[in-house]
Every structure is written in structure tokens, then in C-alpha cells.
Image (tube, rainbow, N blue to C red):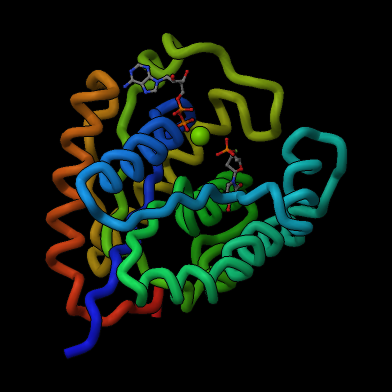
Length: 212
Ligand code: ADP
Ligand code: FDM
Ligand code: MG
């Protein structure tokens, strides 16, 4: 019998919903429970492509909108060989943002249809679970102000949220919405339990391709 594979788990949600907090906490919790787990944050600002993206986000560099969309996607593709290797070795991978952020942010710019936005990410490893951390704009505001990076404004974030809702209508994907207004530990417990159930369910199933 083939070795059991790890699960690919994506965290998505509005700004300050707790994706990065829960991503770190989930990997820590899974490891403590004896599972093999790794975290990847997208964009990964440490690679050459990631550094270009980072200089765009901090407004040091202007990049044309199609170009930056393709760079975000390329930043995912450059991780794919290692992601597949790890998943096949039984390591669960938690991704802090994935292709859904890629599509939602570019689509929110207004002049890019969802179909165009999805194309560069078609064929990426398909997440076994996409956790959408839901938080109202009022509750997000209580967690601090927006920073100074590109996209950090309430009017743009509202458009991003509408794009996420369109993507969530795709029933071929395993979206699960969780209430991100809970305490960090309560939310962690809920997320860990959903993650472990998914890991169990997919361990003998082949890894699929996104949007194919
Ligand atoms: P995201 O990655 O979704 O933007 P972060 O994990 O960076 O969000 O969290 C944004 C801020 O909110 C941080 O200051 C973090 O400590 C705080 N935070 C995260 N989760 C919670 C929670 N469940 N309750 C209260 N504050 C939280
Ligand atoms: N973002 C993130 C995109 O526009 N496209 C993408 O493909 C991804 C993964 O980059 F504003 C945006 C979303 C957010 C910024 O911020 C990255 P964090 O704080 O590193 O998640
Ligand atoms: Mg974050």
C-alpha cells in the first residue's frame, strides 16, 4: 500500500482575521500532537520573486497589474516541487493565503475577470481544505488600524471580500467558514479538529489539481 500523504490546508480571510496567528498555531498544535506539519506563507517574500512582490507591496516599486498578478502566481509555483515532495512524505502543509487571495485581490481591482485571474494558478496542488476566517469589518478594526502597504484600505478590502464570496460558490472545493471572532485558543481548537479530520480523510486519496 502506498504511504499516507499529508494534507494541504489553506487559510484565507479578510485582513486581521487571524490567518497568520492561526497558521503558526495550527502547525505548532499538529506537531505537538505527533503529526508532521510545515507552514508556508504566500507571498513568500524571501525568494527573488518574493522580494519583487514585497517591494511592490511596500510601494517601493510600481509594477503593472497583470505582471504583479503573474508574479504572485509564480511565487506559488516555485514552491510546488517541494510542496509535492513533502505532501507525499506524509507532511501536512498549512498555507497562509493561497491562489484564492491571488484571484480575490486582482479581481477586486475591477478590470480583471475571475476566469483570467484563475488561469495562472490552474494545476497548482489543490487544497484538501480551505478555511475561511470570517470577521466583520468592525471587529477587524478593533484589532488595529490598516498598515501602509498596498491594498490596505477598507473600500478595497470590501471588494476583496465580495471576490472571495464568488470563489466560495465553487462546490468542487472544500471551503469551511469559521467564526474568527472567537478567542485565539478557541478558534485554534476548532481549526485543529477540522484539520485533523481532513488529514484522516485524505491520507489515502491522490492529491488533485486546482481548477482542473
Ligand atoms: P491576518 O494574518 O489574518 O492579517 P493576524 O494573525 O496577523 O491576521 O492577526 C492580526 C492581529 O489580530 C494581530 O495583532 C493578532 O495578535 C490579533 N489577533 C489574531 N487573532 C485574534 C483573535 N482570535 N482575537 C483577538 N485578536 C486576534
Ligand atoms: N496578495 C497575496 C495578493 O495580492 N495576491 C496573492 O496572490 C497573495 C498571496 O498581498 F494584501 C496580497 C494580499 C495582501 C498582501 O499580505 C500580502 P500578507 O500580510 O503578507 O498576507
Ligand atoms: Mg497575515
